[in-house]
Length: 106
Image 1 (cartoon, rainbow, N blue to C red):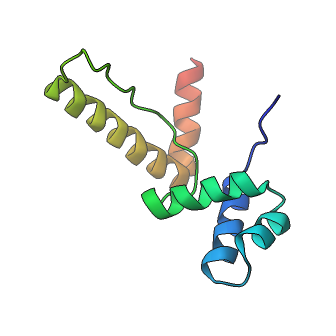
Image 2: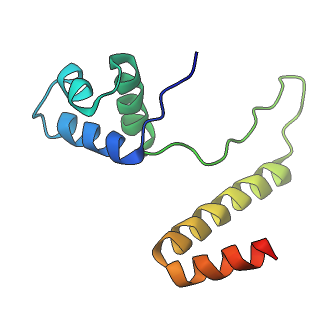
């Protein structure tokens, strides 16, 4: 069983329809071409976390037996934040994105 890939544009279209109260969740899901259960999950994520797209990176949950290392958690959060800022910058600046792609190939 393979999951359907829902593009960020489709997610945004669905959320816009529901938030603007033009359609019910079921109608908006049908118009966007996504399953009802998927649409509910997308809407729940939007309302809870305020994001439309998929997560780019997950932070692993610690086992109950492990003590959380505060410095390690802060470091992981900083890395995630830096990655997010870099992706935002690169998506807005194609000149630097092309240079980065060239340097990664070499």
